Image (cartoon, rainbow, N blue to C red):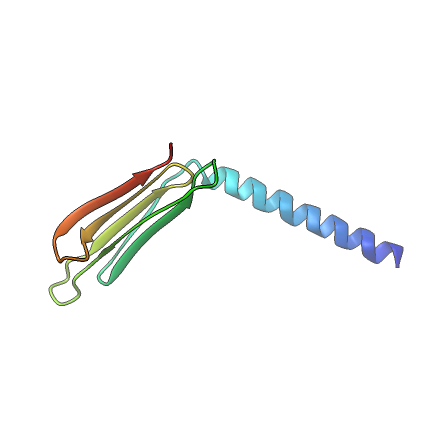
Length: 94
């Protein structure tokens, strides 16, 4: 029984360490993408506040929306807003 508990504990520590290092490496690089339907960007600021934006594309005439995220710092969406106007929306952490 003691070996199973120890093995589980080591597995959890390995998973936490791996996830932490992967997050730390990924947090320095922005991520981005595009879609003909809907774009949404989301991140959580260091103070715990979530920020997000969204925009829509137009699949009829192949007008794509775009999104980008700098994890823990900034989000930006470009595309049609809820009123059908082309717009750029963004949010940043304070």
